[in-house]
Length: 398
Image (cartoon, rainbow, N blue to C red; front, side, top):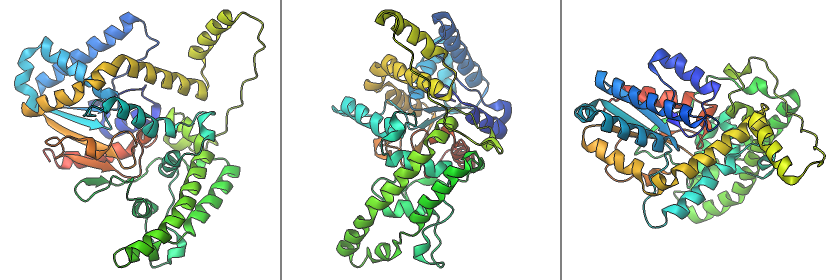
């Protein structure tokens, strides 16, 4: 498994529980020395050579991990050309990958999608104060709402994930053409939320439940114009409440992204870390800049580690930009498929970075949509990927 940023505890715990020692996590850390980075790369190349020589191997990559996998597989095939005869044993799974945008506007698309898919869901103390419907959707996966709005009546109890999809079909990627991996949470994060914030969350969720939309949805087939007008009047309120939900749970989402909750925390009450006091400016700007740089990389707080993680991600983007814009992951995927490899895509339902429409014709026969997830929701909901993998196990070639 490879992806753009550092692996966190919840991901490794959940996958190890499901697959034991059969899974290997590819890590990289921009704080490592050049020698350490090269040693890591060499180890990953040797692993591909060994596993592909022995038999079937599955490689799953997320986001920037697609570039890492492209480079590693290319190096493995260059090191051991005979592996080309074993490519029928290779299965590549792309989860919201980079390097698949085609067309002359792909560079602008990359910038726009990075904002929609990544930056709009950030939970750090600065960004969390900006309203974000996308972060709100992350909060729905973090602490789900049990059922649909009570205003629709007891005979119409619909999972909130289904109701959200019905109200916002323009941003949901669920389609009958693709498999849908239902979100079935096994890690309970609800107990990590303080009692004060639980009370606030209940108020928001109760308001969401009182917004009835069944009538409008039923009339779409017979009186679409009027039904859409009435439905559109309710959408802003739903968006605001979902955004408020994301803002409320942002501090807990931040800890979850960092893997600080082990199996839901088991009774741990999460709190917002206290802000650090301002340091008086008693040194030259250059001295202070150097000091801040050292403090940044050494900061072991949740906010500090998340900032480091994001900095690594952006530096990673910079180092991989050419491969992304040259679409090397896409080119390699086509070549590997032509030589017998199986190519799959796992697409988060509300991902703002990667869309099912970005999958080129010929590579779109194995697509699974991950319910109620954003670009990186699986950092704290690795069960979503495990469920999708189980579906893939049940359909090895389709």
